[in-house]
Length: 223
Image 1: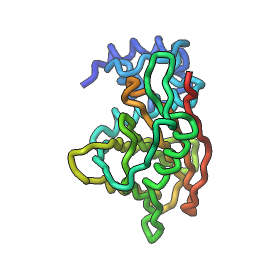
Image 2 (image 1 turned 45 degrees about the vertical axis):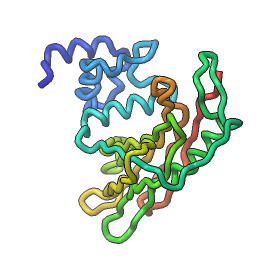
Image 3 (image 1 turned 60 degrees about the vertical axis):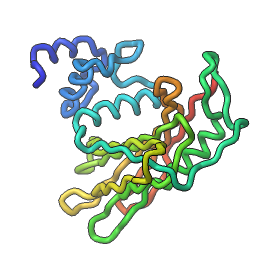
Image 4 (image 1 turned 90 degrees about the vertical axis):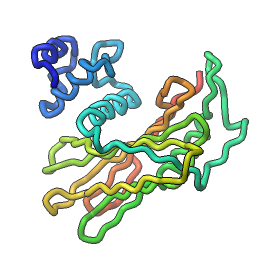
């Protein structure tokens, strides 16, 4: 249980608190209370940087839907990279070059498929390995009732491991009470050699007709 009085103290510390949807405010306060998010340098929870916005959304999902998170150990169909595909930042941290990250994002797009039938399901069936030190996170949100309201309800963390060949196969219903609804899929690549920093993100929109459209893609340029 979270003490209400303690949670309310954080509301005054978040400059853009009023812009956070009321349905999400309690979970945002829990993020601050747990110390897993302290806002950006301007004291805002929802900063302007797309990569930081993805991170903020993921934190809400991690608290609300902790029981839905999963991990997969994968070794099949590995994406191959040579040393020429890597670079080093100013701190000597090894990371993929932007063009290599683009290639990896394309491979991660194959992590999910759409099944129509009567249920309208998004199937996340990850069967591809990632370069050493990288993890992929997939976050799914649905748009309900035709309103601009995002219900982040599924998060999947994928990592490469030598333990076994188990793979995730998660199904997300893309309908509410039988009515198809739009959804957004965020794919985020993290460099665990660099404190888990997000290096690339792509965003897809799934329409009510189950069409898939790439909305945006961004990579963190090497310093």
